[in-house]
Image (cartoon, rainbow, N blue to C red; front, side):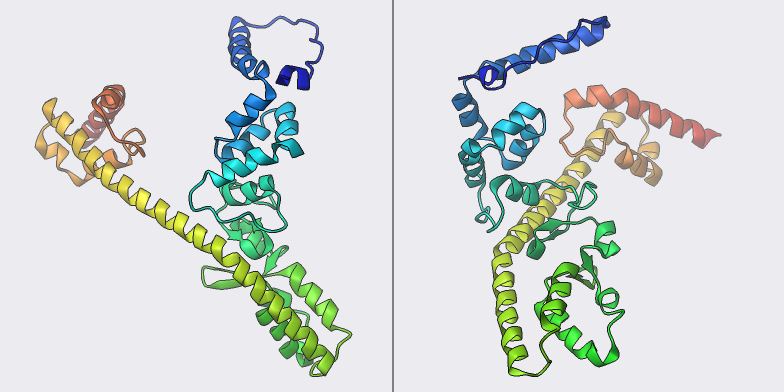
Length: 309
């Protein structure tokens, strides 16, 4: 069975006039998609099992047909193979399916407002939140916000619920607590009188649940830290590479006759390092230099003209 049979094509709409450019774009896209449409489904799924989880997510968002295929129960093995193919990835989080797990770990959109990129993962509540949504207080809130309307005689108990039971997230020296969890604890503890055996029994049970939750989050927090450190090392390497790129550009400009008195100026270095064609996350080669050289030389000429004026 092929994707064409699995997802029958709709009847073509009435033909409309289009420009040659649009016709060409459609023809080219159709040729590429045809390779996928005419491929047996089991072969497609085998191919998909070798891509990263994030790529599977992106594929599932390209067309309704691919989404239906990748979100079906028959594709669970594809997601699992993609996940197991990534070195060092922790086991899937309990309560999440494979696409949800991949979405949490790799897709960088905020789960509230869809803003991207969003770096903050709150593992205890299985969510990504941008700074604005984190500060907004709807999902996570600081203690001042949560305890604002608490009577003074109940503050001690409220602090105990907040600090000992409520899932939290620290950022820039501030601690944010999960609002829904805190409000649930307040509701559950309301019928119980503080200091009674019934209250103490309930409280100890909640403390154990919080310890279990914190313990379950550790592998994912460690994975995130490791990934962040690896990215930092990669960026450090790129910075060293950019220094090599700057030296590369200076050497070629010098070979073209630009005087050292101009090239050694701090203004020249700052302008070259900031230039969007020079400040790239890839090594500069002779081939790339031929492409960017006109723009770099134009900038150098403009700087020389400004210096004269």
